[in-house]
Length: 554
Image 1 (spheres, rainbow, N blue to C red):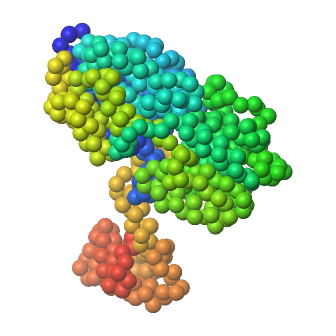
Image 2 (image 1 turned 135 degrees about the vertical axis):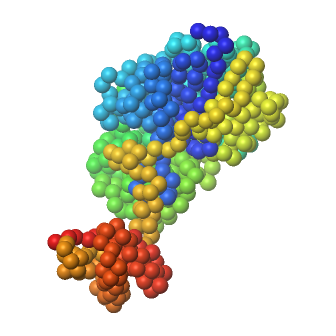
Image 3 (image 1 turned 180 degrees about the horizontal axis):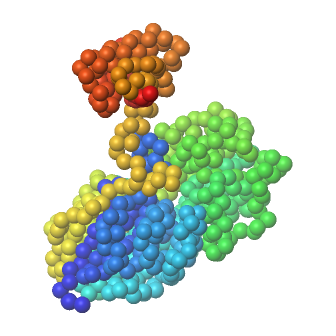
């Protein structure tokens, strides 16, 4: 291979947003992909289940994709793989727990057959095409997280993945500081670093802090304890289970995703607890309240999650009772604050004592604060720097931090999804862009819901729909039946008879005009009916329902 081949970095997700992380590393005619995550929909994405990266660029270059390497097992890093691997079947490399969680996702989506999953350990070096890929242990809120050093003929690309410098991790697996320092001594061409928490000064607290808070809370609680957390936060679940064991409480789990994670993590040896500690949810009512701990999903106030259903008295097996202590051990993802606040309010109304994030110590982040970000840069001393994983303001703040510690401004690049960042040994430049964006997943449909459908859903949700049904005689074009009007989400027909009768009159007038002018084309007739009805209804109600004319010929 020519030594003057260019090295390109192309983010397909994770820039200017939290989630759907995906980075393409291209050298010559070889592509390596780092992570393949999903994002949860924003409020205006009505009915959408998840959002995944647009992989048009990978599909166009299918033949030169050599593999996908994973940093850790969170949804925003592995969640899009069932969709990606359907289209591009390439080897996937990840640590044991990451692949264990991925395998569960692939089975669920019927993609498990024929996918090559390769387990790696920290400090392993794997050759994938011209890339030598090295995996480096880091701490995060899930075990088995790694940073990835990609050694290319032009230089080393270091992708931190999600990390924090936890000096007292729950599983005792300390970040491999030595390896980062070694890489720094040898020389790192470009560092891609996690920007999620760049707005927080100082250091991120150790996960052990939460264990201490759990201990205090469990010791003081007289009734049942319900702990809500992210299903994938294995260390947090392990600490809750260990504290329950210490205070002689049985543990039940509510929420399918949490059951899956606990099952996989314990089978693979990442969680340790006596099996007899666990009871089925149905059995908790037979136990004294002070002997019960429930681990549950729903820390983000998701409408269908177990905790929200408990708060709304809508859960089949668990009812909140006065004296329950509910610990919400997670901070709201931006955009979820209202949902979380509503859930907390309902839990208080049911008589529970709720401990949530603003009462510090019940949740710590898995991401690095400013001092850790500076330390990462100082350890690896990169020539070029690219902040990743964050909304645009996070990327800018991280770029400023890099400038503060002495990386020249000309060597710092804040890029957007789809930008192509091209490197030679001593230079870097932005060179064009590729297709990148969001693919919306709704049920089994991937990408078939676009802006027009979302616009319609928005209109339907705000103003409702009015269906106008007319039957026309084919030869003469005269109306033989109707117009009839059906309304949903606009007005209740029986209570607004006069409005509907007058709307029918407007439809008749519009049809008569069409007849007078000799308009026989259906599209024109429908358009005239829609315009006349819309204008009348707006004048009367100041609302614009979707108007759907249906014309039948006999």
